[in-house]
Length: 139
Image (tube, rainbow, N blue to C red; front, side, top):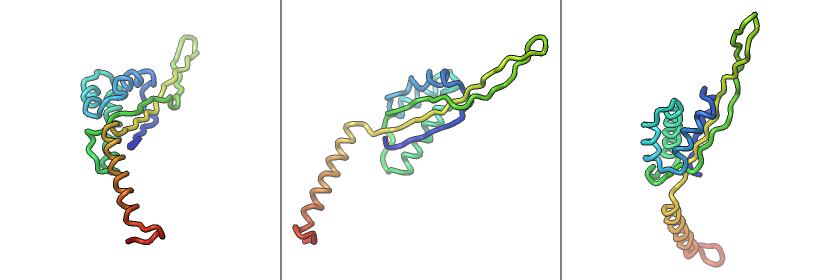
């Protein structure tokens, strides 16, 4: 995981949000955005904003292209339930539970790019080790 975005207390039922979230799990950012733009569900606009937020976090923290990343983890947890009263016959009432959601989205780097970066880091470490003498002083 390199970038993470969380949205809490979204006024949509977790069951409805999970339908949209399941569509984009494991996809690249561009593909996921295209899917969300053309999905006729109310949760798709919320998840799209969350994806844009995670991408902005990525751009701010690390100077890498967003094309190299995919959605590694995305899940919906149940938030608080707002309890409301629905009037019924003879002065009684039924309880309505308005459900909310907490949505978490995590972006990770593609495996090929991860391996390339690991190799670059290993080369840098080897170069630094060559500079340092046995006694810990630079040559």
